[in-house]
Length: 410
Image (spheres, rainbow, N blue to C red):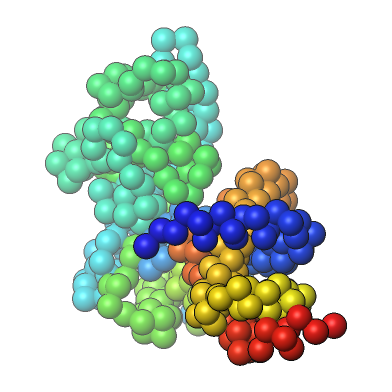
């Protein structure tokens, strides 16, 4: 039950002992501030690595052709490997169970896009509809490409959010026609991409349309696919190795030739990032625990000193009829109040500092340094609990002292 007299008494005590109150509050606030900053910076590092791998699905594989560096089966080195449509059929037949999404790709760079006097140059990719989950593209308006577009070789495009912004400003691009190198395409969708600005300046058109426009035959540039998410990292790497081996056999490439086919499996990068993140989380956890332990020790020492300093006061209270429980309750209530208020101030100060320095930390690979509220609240509760325990033990000891002994205490 709320006791107004008790709170008046607590505030009077705090007011009469401003230095003591300030020192104890500073210790708690500084511990929470440091805890918030350390966790925030650690989360900023995690955000950086998450962003670096956000542009593509973590279970994606990209297969690019290159130039042979070794002679093989009577064929000279320096031969360029050229993927064709039959490679699409070959891969899907061999790995039907392992592949989740799949798309051959034709890429044309530096394509001039024009809309009513506004123009810019972009990369145009001819893809299957399956390419959307590979790039983790999020449709903001309209739709992505469909297999009907693919079948009809439709002159339609899905454009990145920044392409729309460049050519249309604040207006919607939906249903408008954009000239790409002089050929008109209708915009059917606008997408955003967690990979950032670069990935939002791509233009996607059906693979069949791009192949008929930019190739004289059935050639293509590269493949993108995602493997079955049920595969673990080792199984995914085994799948990639087998895929590389069979493609080398199909194109008469020496098994030891590393330059003829370049296969990039994001599982390797994802595993490395997961291991790094685990180590980083452990380091942050130990630092956070160390900070809290230092705060707990500081609070404990201050509470012992505060109770010791107030021994005569407690003796007078007992002489005037105060019960041991009321004395303990008063000290505990004061301890919890100071710890909670100081902890909140430390939390707010930490949040403000992180926001103020957030942009300047990006050059150190720290992005959006922040800390979850529940983490800091939990840390504050730990300190409040520590302050409560630290106040209870000496308060209980002091409450047992006889008034005459307390008054004679030096």
